[in-house]
Length: 55
Image (cartoon, rainbow, N blue to C red):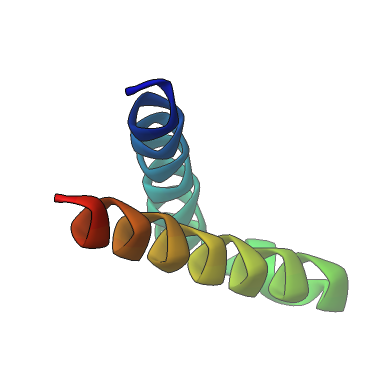
């Protein structure tokens, strides 16, 4: 149960960060930020898959 809660919180936070990055495209001027945003998307998808596979 705690794992699902942490995964859900991570998905919510990741989604909020992704929405901010989509809202502010000038934020992508730095290569490290692009890498971090891509990593957040990948981790967000993995957390979602984990929740879907445990249902």
